[in-house]
Length: 423
Ligand SMILES: NC(=O)C1=CN([C@@H]2O[C@H](COP(=O)(O)OP(=O)(O)OC[C@H]3O[C@@H](n4cnc5c(N)ncnc54)[C@H](OP(=O)(O)O)[C@@H]3O)[C@@H](O)[C@H]2O)C=CC1
Ligand SMILES: CC(=O)C(=O)O
Ligand SMILES: [Mg+2]
Image (cartoon, rainbow, N blue to C red; front, top):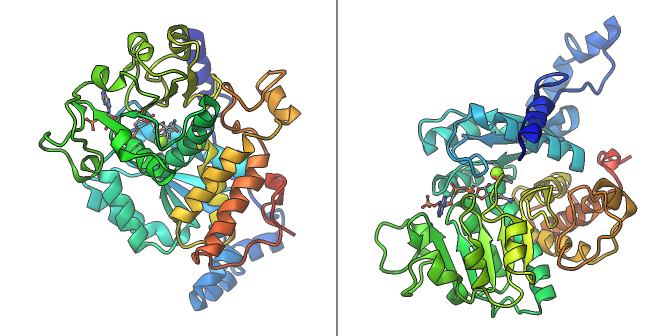
């Protein structure tokens, strides 16, 4: 970013009031009668109803449309472990996206936890008053243990966005990119830079979508994850290969796909030149990708290039997933977000990219043309059709797979966020 843009970003967060979120009232509060209903004595009535029957919390409070965005700040974007307080702008940002794209209320909670168990206990103790929990920017490998324990302990959906949101969007974009490149997912040689939360989940989902583990090389800070390496955790071990390759230079030679979920500037133009024809590069590290799109394009005009950012074409970013996935899950009161729901979201996203782009999206991106192809492999976040397509697909999948506690909503498909409460 230029210095001017950096200052603009600071000003955006600081002015006219600090932060990006505020709380709004949904009921009148002007009169003594209003207050007698909202607070004492009236508030005692819903309290009694909820104490009598817990499900009444969905009727008398905001629980059913409320997601907690919870982080320990241990992996803030690609900036590393900068702690809970520094993660707050990102967590507020996730709240903004929940609200503006899916009409979901959210509150960010940044936990200063001395251990994964302390984090788990903290979240488990507050979980029941939320509709869902979005875990964010928690580093691997702790994130895996944390999410698993919370899914077991909570009766509401718990979803680590950096794992599953990222994986869903990456898989959708990848299926489209490979189609454009004329390659079958089962045949392509994939290099994944990074072996953390996002990388492990992305590779697992790509394998579910047909990629072959035998064609997949994963790297971390120490290089290629191979069978002879000692001290790799069980998650990295899932992707360890019996190979003589040791470095990115070795792995990238002839690769069809590079997926970066690691750190900035780790892929060079020279390495891109060594990739196979029509290479697919998803340099998804935020805010600064593994390679700048201009550099990649100069090295290889045939590249299909995506980043995690809003200011380049093909934004492969979990913003395309978590708002709509939670929308669908909340609206059928799903107890969890399972693999069937994730795959439904992949296909909804993938298929939407193949449809004509609405004028409002062109206007928002100041483009005269956007159509399925190298520079448009995935919908943009401002596309209002995501709300209908992804949420509906996820809700239907929850019903079909038996995790929904309510039927498919009568008010679906949603046209805009104004429709989320139905009639
Ligand atoms: N576009 C999107 O939607 C998303 C993008 N991301 C991006 O993915 C990245 C990783 O996030 P996340 O998985 O949550 O974080 P984690 O901390 O869980 O994982 C980071 C991984 O990156 C590896 N890594 C970091 N620096 C290097 C390096 N110099 N060389 C090789 N490997 C390196 C780490 O290696 P080691 O294991 O050796 O420490 C680790 O495996 C971030 O940059 C984040 O912005 C994440 C989620 C969504
Ligand atoms: C997008 C996101 O969640 C990340 O970079 O961590
Ligand atoms: Mg994140």
